[in-house]
Length: 144
Image 1 (cartoon, rainbow, N blue to C red):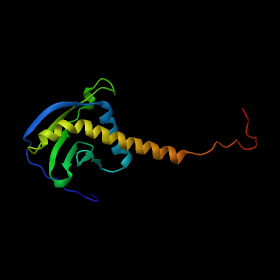
Image 2: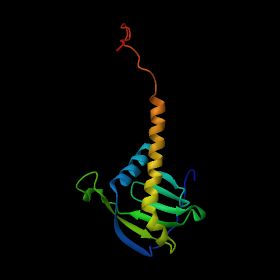
Image 3: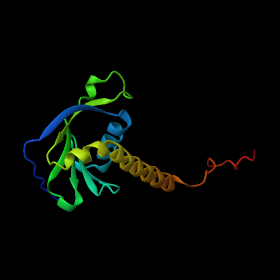
Image 4: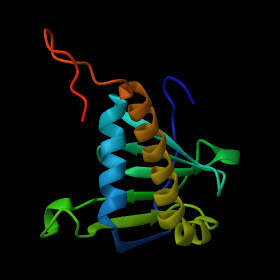
């Protein structure tokens, strides 16, 4: 999914209010910011889904029917929480019948996919910054 992608959805067949754990919400938005793009594609391999994060919502598409939105998380209200570690209220919208079953699993599986992305990011960051301590110029290294 490179370049521009177009996704289709009708009116939701079901919608309800839920809360997203703060860690998941925060990881999603940090990953989006790190990407430097308007949207970020996150594979959810355990479900054969793709999540697409943008500033306003997160949509989920089945890789088999990659242009049809099955589930969307919208209307995030992070300002409603009293602390950064408090859950974030949002609205889940289901667009396809099979999305009802998918919606039950998405919160947990999406969190796992984000944690894996974060782990890879931290690993790359550590390997980029690995090195040796250099002595200050003009002073020999001290031996402790």
